[in-house]
Image (cartoon, one colour):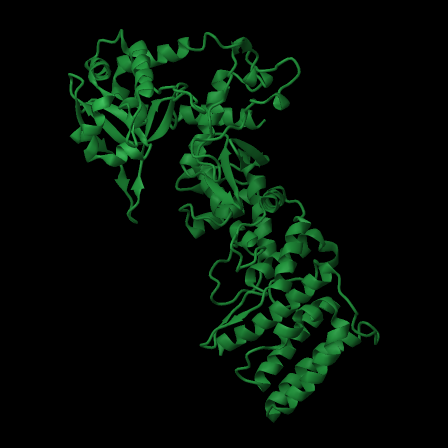
Length: 590
């Protein structure tokens, strides 16, 4: 299903002229090998573009598809290759074997061509001597072209061989005839019969953490991976036609190259709609918290309409809620790619599930938090020690969290447990200038705790958990959390500028085993009240009494529980967080 969806997407891309036909692919090019009509080298010309931050950006051109190279194989590529093949010289070393392989390939394809460009390229191969390259002033003038391993491409004066119709026809003919030795059979992707079966599938490039030369999704090169009776047959173990193999890999490479993807944990996540309209991808990307250039007004209107099953317009383009939409997670695994997850649904259902997730995550936030929709990377970052040398979250956790959001399923228990672990492990940091960096109970952690409890345990907590503090909530863990916040505020009022509060010393115990801690905290409260002026004493006494009444009356005088389970600990944290935010919000309003 994955390969079929990508192959169909390729057909949509080629319909819109966004990718090349089979035998052609877009590759990054660094330099042009400029020749005159006699095949003499005139210049190594850089075609790198400089970005605003000073980085060099390679130019992507539609070139003859390169053949897969592995190990020490000397396989030349047509028209576009590295300096070792086109010039026979790279990184201070002569590469005669590579140059001769390129010379043989170009003669095989271009010998019958009469165009000026084709003849100039063949003359170059016949006259160029790699042994003299080291002393060539043109080579020495552009050391990066030789040493960086980037792709070079021929150009004759100002005429590109890529625009020479005779050369293009020669390549297409060569490519079509080169499949004669392939096994023929039925393609498991398209269902077509008697088609050439791909022995080796093209590489996918640009996946984070994978080899820079690319990695394969489908690969059989050890006996342990082969089916019975197909030893040494590689691609015949899973017969995918040459066309389908090219199509799905071209589609994937396009998605990654054109940044129609996101990084989630250590995974590369690509997404697309069946008809290849990029606005579906942009809308999805914005909903996931990324910036895809859609205004807030357009995004809000799109989410509202699409979630209700209605069509939406963005920039004059109509988006349908019924459009098939796909999300694919890829993880690096040596020379191969692992499929982390694959999701398919309508665009409307996908956006509706994401919108529901963001609605559950809504919670009152500090004034410095400008981001209302929390992106996935921030959620995952909240599960990692902020002082860790390796800040990456678990890739398995990232995949399972994204799946739960897209499918509208319960959040993974491991995500909730990791958030609680960080709450208990992290501590706020106080600077010399009196400022405090909040690490323990952050906006992001509180938002996910609320979302988790609403999604996974709605029957118990659905009526109690709101965006801001819920003073009507009688749930004991919630009231205890609010009470702890008031006790902390009382301590700070009694001891202005205090370096450490009861939060630093007692919060973890109060959250997990409140029965053993709150009697001590209430005794401390009496001492703190004695330090306050009359007006403040009355204010805090009323606050404490109101919350204490909520604890005693509903439980008919039962003592504070000796321990809270993980669900209840989350509710305690929310009570503390929302009561604290209420206090700071009032200060800001004043």
